[in-house]
Image (tube, rainbow, N blue to C red; front, side, top):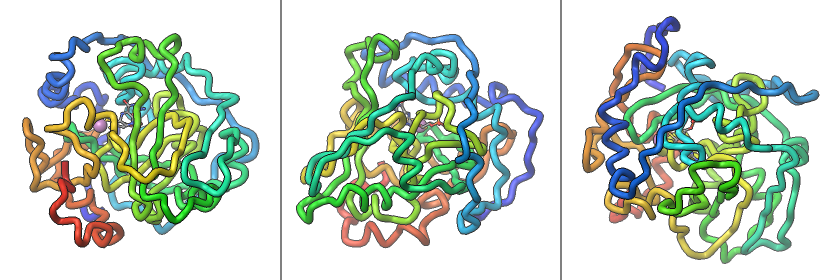
Length: 313
Ligand SMILES: Nc1nc2c(c(=O)[nH]1)N[C@H]1C(S)=C(S)[C@@H](COP(=O)(O)O)O[C@H]1N2
Ligand SMILES: [Mo]
């Protein structure tokens, strides 16, 4: 939030791909034989009655230009649909309506609710957020959704709940990547209860004023902008309140390289590359990365007393 950059709308994201870094992250998978690349391009979003565009919450404005929608739509990480960035066409096959969301675990009363009912019930607002991928590229996205704290309130967790575990759909017939059994499907992520209650933790159901395109994780995905992108789990089907720290997808794949906390820190290098700076998607700019991705003011307090943990991996 501290850097004002010149936007360069004209450049295709493909020209900006820091290939070396992506290739490098794939090494973790290469050892497991997961190098299938899927060629495809963008799909589209449908219009949704009444709810979009939602009013912008001005407290979350940024001083960095938004990533052009087209760049964003054609450059994604969604391993369920393959390991390339161009998974939009493959992801278009996912049927996101109806979409049942389960809320269970340590709650007063487990419940199931359709994603569309959930957004009608919890309301929608727009927020401009950064996203910093662990691969050292970043973007800036206008998400539409609701604070995660509202979903927590709806769930009424018991005092014994310590973590919120979130799980992506699992359907290998639709998602080709899920047919590859060397991945620990389904994709799982987690937050502490305090993180889930932080005002920045957001459930996105739209982007750029429209319902979320499938490649971004329709119909609902997490957006926790102070953490590396892999924490922001897509296409969630289940929220479980649990006592034990969930084993997360990337942690399960490469525990030496990816951890539970995954807070952005330019001073803590990934074992195989620096995190000091980032390539701004859709531009030629490479800018310094900020502690907590620029959100230290909002989240640094969450980690007091946890200095012994691997907070930044
Ligand atoms: N289910 C699921 N969620 C996921 C991923 C994934 O592969 N599967 N990739 C993560 C990573 S590494 C990033 S950087 C962001 C990318 O979000 P975007 O494609 O909408 O930009 O989604 C995250 N959420
Ligand atoms: Mo990522």
